[in-house]
Amino acid sequence: MKKYVLVYGSIAGLILAGILAYMATMSHSTSNDMTMSMIWGFVFFLLPLSLVFVGVRAYRQNVLGGYISFGRAFLCGVCIALVASLFYVASWEVYVNTYASGFIDDYTQCVIDQAKMDGVTGDSLATMTAELQSDAHTYKTNPVYRMSYTIMEVLPLGILISLISALILMKRHKGDNQTA
Image (cartoon, rainbow, N blue to C red; front, side, top):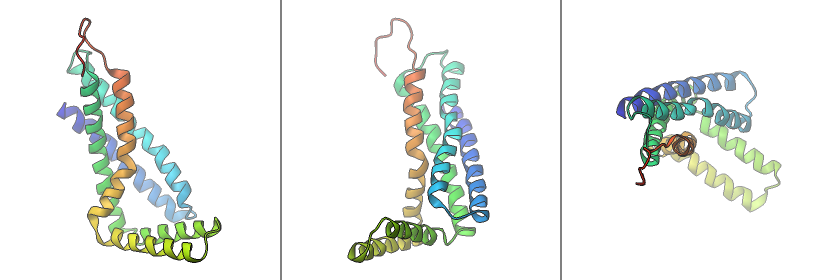
């Protein structure tokens, strides 16, 4: 399974890194609408994470003779998604530490501006602003904190795709009544 996890996870991770580079380039040349960037980013994550399904299927067909339990399929898928997510986190770390050191400040300001447009004022706005600025400081100064947020952009979707893939691809030998 390790070979399939590394191959398909790496390919998906490289595609995710490429999408990140493309989106980062586009965000510098277009308006700074972070909401749309996040929506498009999520949509674009589906393409490379579809390799979870492809990788699990290839493993089932090429190594296991066309049969795989739900548990093994799910584990394989999650591992592929984890490898891809680690590529994404590494790419984000390079990007945020070289080209986008002001990203979190821009994001924080975008959230505050949106809250103002939604009618948040007074003490509520002041409290929210203080919390966001504190989080932004931690994001800038604590790489583990930043990486944990970054991996949560991709990995939950990868886990969901792993679950769906395992449900679709599980196939037991006839007469095998054991559970995964």
